[in-house]
Image 1 (cartoon, rainbow, N blue to C red):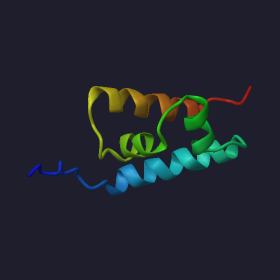
Image 2: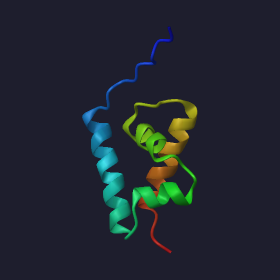
Image 3: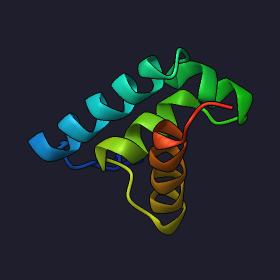
Length: 75
């Protein structure tokens, strides 16, 4: 029988950062979901990366990419 991999629960700081990212995309008149679709990123993976429940090198790079995109000025 295979065991399920346990993930850590998101911290309050991670939750707040996630909400900030969502708000930043909204202010740019777009959405987190639209960003994920445009960049072929699975939304669940992006959410886990932002919340810190997935924390590998790839997740950290993805988190950084999303945060930067949410802060960038619209074209």
